Image 1 (tube, rainbow, N blue to C red):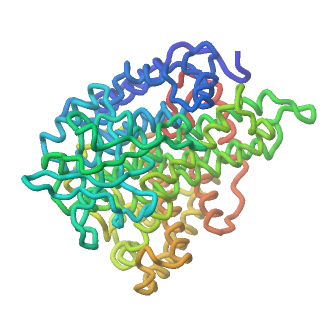
Image 2: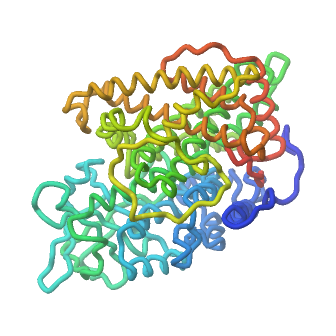
Image 3: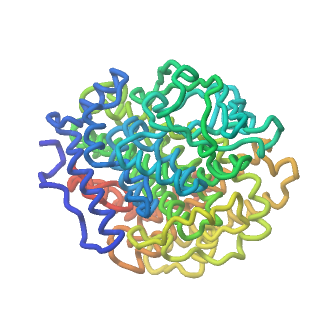
Length: 590
């Protein structure tokens, strides 16, 4: 038996629930049962076998077979089209179970298809949606190609062309590089230049199906070798006058940038929360090591620095999941405000998760470098996780989305908006459908920071932990006021993506404040509902806000000793009971 664990039976579905939550909990439990205990060497999806596939540069065949059997492609398809997608936060919970085992499997099997499909769900017509739904529910894959190596995230400068053809339709000319599953996909979503004129109106999105293409006019480019996600099939496509029908056009011609930016609001909100599973595994791996490793005649867990590092990583996971929760639920509840929330989530969450893993590597010591055995999964996750900060929307691109909105938010929103609805912070409460047509490219409102401001007058102060929370919220609201003043004073040239480094730092500060607001909202609702004793305890929020205040350069007062004790107790409980280190406390297979 693993050190520090207790035997338990099959994964249970958790508390009885109805409707959306019942379906979500059942789906997560179904994945856990099928994927099995990754620490069991006899499991075909054990960490050892996933590492072997990674060393071979391939996705786990057993993993893909399991996800085929589970029909994972349907999780990316709206229910109205025969799939399971009804809530974005539910999709995050489902994919988190895959990501905690293997980032490459999560990206390589399905998330790429989701990133492509969102463009069609957002702007496509009914026949396109139906065709794509049939591909995904039938076990097929779809790839998305936004960028070109020569232009990076500046995709409005892309040179790949879809030239209008005589008699209708288009002819594809040029190459797209670094496409996940390019050679395995049944269809591709291609961001294409449809006019030689400069500017964003010169680009469109096309849904191109492999079947029926002239085989002599296109080819798959050689596969790239990658440092992380070695199993992902990263290659490219080259087209030389390939004809495609006019029905391939997604939305209106010349509206490709708008389509992509609306799709980004969904994918930027969802993908970071999936990655929480990787750092969950890293923390679990280091807890196991700390309990079993003897140093100076005691376990590593008894060393104060090691214990504090583990609790700090747990705190970071709660922070990231709070922001992820607010961002994904905002797509349903506050779609007009989602642009800035999504960009902040995609920017901050992978950054915090990666930093937490580097801190955990110090506790693991030399074993951090080992590529096999019980600690090998740690180095694989640490290599794979940074990929999520790149891809279709890198960190700088996300900050560049926030920067033009800062001055407007400073003038119109902060300290004047109404707080977000309670449902934004309730992990298990039902949601309305995804309102694709209400997603906007920019917003002058921020109900999330309004929640932080409103908390100043609503927080209890009876216990030492509550008083610590109250003091930290006051400091963070003061920080928001400073961000507001700096944003109001921005020169015109600093309100664009070409702004100087100080403005990018301002966007970073704002993202941290959004995370603080999200965690505060989660705690307020948990304390009101009383259904989760840990989330209702102010200790975890005090720890979250303390770390975020320090991240902002503040020097907050020391927390009551009870905060560290409570977090340490919860780290051990979740390890021994095999439940997740996020807001859901989900039963795990191992």
